[in-house]
Length: 357
Ligand SMILES: *Cc1c(COP(=O)(O)O)cnc(C)c1O
Image 1: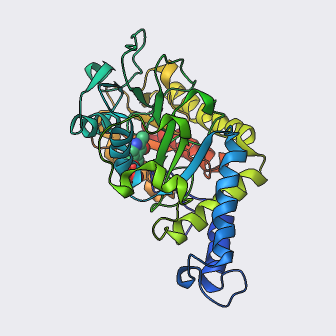
Image 2: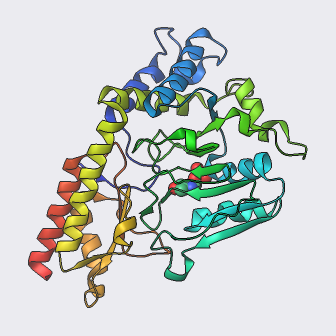
Image 3: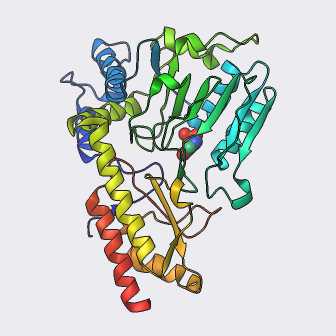
C-alpha cells in the first residue's frame, strides 16, 4: 500500500509523533505501568497533562490574562447551546455563513431571541457577507470564522461593538488571533487541535454571569473554569492526544510557523485549481479558506467528476469528496497535512488534465 495523502475534513490527519507518543502512553502512562485509559484522572501525573495542555494553548495563541481555556464534551454542536445559555439574555445576532452557523443560530433561537444579521445563503454560502452593520443592542455577535463545508474564511479579527463570539472549530491554531477581541472562542478539537471527543472554549471570564436564567451545572462555563475542566471525568485519551498535538505545534515553531506552512499549502492548491482548465474553485476568491479548499469540475467537464474521484483514489488520495451540500471536491489542509500531500494532489490533477483536458 502506498503512503496515503489524507484530506479528510474532520476527524482528520494528526501529527504522526502525537499518534506515536499516544500509543506509548496507551501501553504505559509515564512509567506508571498503567495504561493512559486506565489511570485515575485524579492522579498527579494526569494533573500535569491537564496543566501542560492549558499552558500550551495559552502560550501558542498568546491568550491574555483574564481568559481561561476549558475542555468540554459535546463537540462544537453542544457549544452552540453553551453560547446561548451563557450569553443570551435579550437578543443575539449571528452571521449566517453556512450550515454550522445556521445550526448555531437555530440552537440560540430555541433559548431566546436570536437573528441573522447578514447571510450569504443567496449564493449557497460561497462568500462572506460584507458591509453589514452589527446592531449595538445585541448581547453578543456570533461568527463562524471558517466555513468548513464551503471553504470560506474570515481571516481577520473583526471590530465588533458588542461581545464577539466565534466558532473556530476548523481554523483554530492556523493563524495568529487577537484573542482580546473576543468574549469567547470555541470549537471541536477534531480539525486542528486533536482527535474527536473533546471540545475547547477560550473564555474571557468577566464576560460571564450576565444572564438571569438558571444554568444547569454542566452547561455553566463557570463550573468548568472553577474545576479546571475536571468537574466530571475528562476525556483523558482525547486530551492526551491534544496535548501531544500542541507539543508538536510548539516544537515546529508555533503559530507563525504553522501559518506560513498552511498558507503555502493553500496557495499551491488554489494556483492549480485556477490554472487547470478542468477544475473551478467554488468560494469567492477574496474569502478563500486556507483550511478547506473546495472545487468542482469546470463547466462542460461535469461528467468527469466520478472519473476523477476514482483516478485520485487509485493514486492514494483520501478524503477529497465534497460535502453533499456543495458537491465536487474538498481538500482539507489542516495543520498536520504537509506540502508533500498537497504536491501529490496537484500532480494527480495535472496527470488527469493530460488524459482528459
Ligand atoms: C465540524 C464543525 C462543527 C461541528 O463540530 P462537532 O464537534 O462535530 O459538533 C461546528 N462548527 C464548525 C465550523 C465545524 O467545522
